[in-house]
Image 1 (cartoon, rainbow, N blue to C red):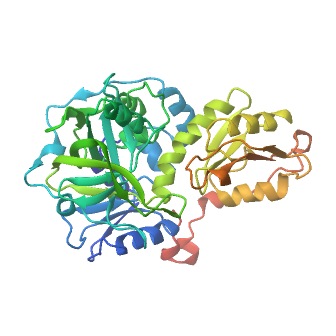
Image 2 (image 1 turned 120 degrees about the horizontal axis):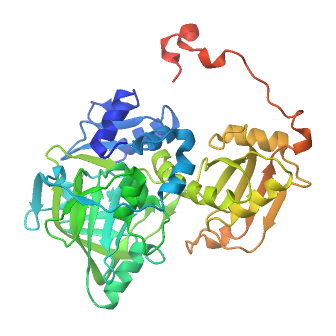
Image 3 (image 1 turned 60 degrees about the vertical axis):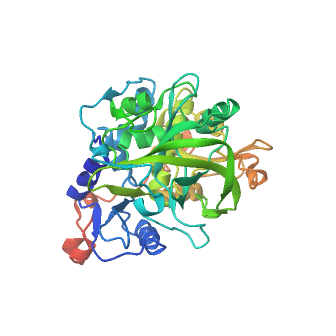
Length: 450
C-alpha cells in the first residue's frame, strides 16, 4: 500500500506514469489547459516543477487510473470492489505519529496570506479566481467528536480568508449547522496532498455517525498517522503535504463563484461559508495538489465510492463481476455473470436504487469491460432489445442541486446482456497472440504499447 502523497508520486514515476513539466507554466489557465489536454491523451500524472510566482510545485492527475487506486491500497485491480466492500465496515482508528513532515514549516496567523502561501491556480474561463480544488476538509462533530473528511472547493480570497461551498445534507454542512446553532465557529483543517486512503475516505458514502479518520485506516488496512494541529483542536494527517488550519465562521456568508464544476458547466455566484485560517503548516518542499472538477482524477476518486455502493446493492441478486462509471457520475455500468434471464432485471432494479445519483444504468455481460465506454456502446448496439430491455422509473428524484434538479427526475436502465439461451451465438471472437504484441516493434518506438 501507499501511505503518503509523496510515495504515490514516486510510485507513478517508477512506472512511467508521471510526466515532469520543467518549463515555466502560468497557474492561471495554462496549467489547467495542459492538465485537460493530458487527460484527453496519455492521462498520466503531472508534476509542474516551475509554476510562475508559486511557492510550491504542483501535482495533479495522480489518482486518475484504476490500477493506481488499487496499488495505493495494496489490492489487485480485479479485486478492488469486493475487497473494499469488505474493508469499509472495518474501522481502524488513527495512531499518533512521533514526527510530522507536514509540520516542518509553520506559518502563523500574523504571517500568513493564503493568496501568497498557496499556488493561485485558476481553471476555467469564468471562474471567480484561484480555488483550492484538492482540499480535504477535516472537522469534528461539535457534540459527538466524530471526524468527517470531505472534498470541498474553496475560493482563495487573501489574508486569512477562503470561501467554502458546503451545505446540508453533506455531513460537513450538518456539522457546521450544529456549531452555528450554538453560535460557535466550527474548527476545521484543509488537507492538501493527503495520503491516498484519506482521499478515498473523503470521497466515500459512509454513515453519518462513522469516523472518517478510522475509515481511512480501513481503506489502507493500517492506522492513519496523525498529529495534533498547531492552532486547531483537531488531528491532522502527519504525512500530508500541506494543512491550512482554521475555522468556519458562524452566521457569515459571502458571495462565492462562479466556478466550473464536475458536469462541465458553471455553478453561478452564491452566498457560501467563510473559512478563516489560523495557520498554514507544510513540508519544507511541499507539493500542492490540484484536481480538475469533472476530470479523470476527480471521477476516478468519486466513482470508486459509487461503484462499491452499487456492488453491495446488486451482489445479493446477481453475480456481479465489476461495476464502472465511465464518463460521469450520474450513471453506471454493471457487468454480471448471467445465469438466468431474470438476473439482468434484478440487477437493474438494485443498481438504480443503490444511490440517488444513479439515473442511468446499463447491465452488460461478464465479457464486457464496464469501464470502457466503447465496449458498453458495443454491448448496447449488439445485445440490447428496445422491445424488452428497458426499465423506466418516472418521477424519482436524482441529482439534487436546485438549479438542475428537474432535469434529473426519473431513472432509466438498459439490459445489454445476451439471452441465456443464445450465449453461443453471442460468444465474442478472439485474436490469438494479441496480448504479446508490442506495437513499437511494428510501428516504431513512439507507438510503444502501455
